[in-house]
Length: 187
Image (cartoon, rainbow, N blue to C red):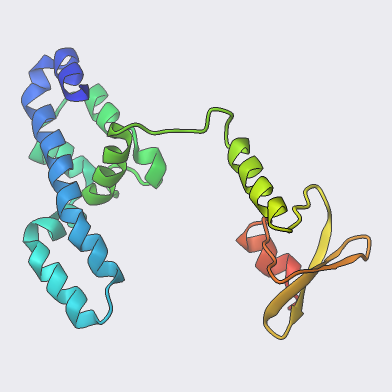
């Protein structure tokens, strides 16, 4: 496993490596009620769940990845620190700003294997297109859309750049949130 491999490459840091991965596992365990509580209504029940998770769970959310690696685990080797921070690209935060709880959740995902479609992300798009087409929908690509047509606040169709109008019960924009709200919807 990864822990043994890292201990073999960084024998002077073996104790810290083992502690780090125990903390990753523990943080993932306490994250379940923490994340569940964020979705619970009413608030009193969410607060009860948060109290149940205790100080330890809140602590994982309050401490940085950097602090856990350096202070809690005592890992001094800069290369090993970089290896243990390898998943921070997913969060977009530097080690001193990323909550350890978030990093531990992402790290556990990769420890079980981070997967990608064999044919690349285009395989996902092809699969969606097949489902849409088989259910009577249409997918238009590389077509200029002038605007999304509304009936009140409900999207009912699109107007193409060439003036053609297409109507449907469900309109899905793949133009991104900024373009959809700022360029395609009437002001």
